[in-house]
Length: 57
Image (cartoon, rainbow, N blue to C red):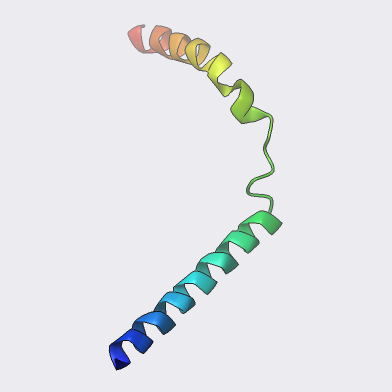
């Protein structure tokens, strides 16, 4: 029974650390870029074509 208490306390500590890391990332602006993911797929082919041209030369 004491092992269950140990596992529950460790899982609560890990959950609190994960929550702290998430809140810190949000406050530092880690998830602020809303524009780039929506247009990234439009420019991927152009980047690959220019990279292939420079690699073949």
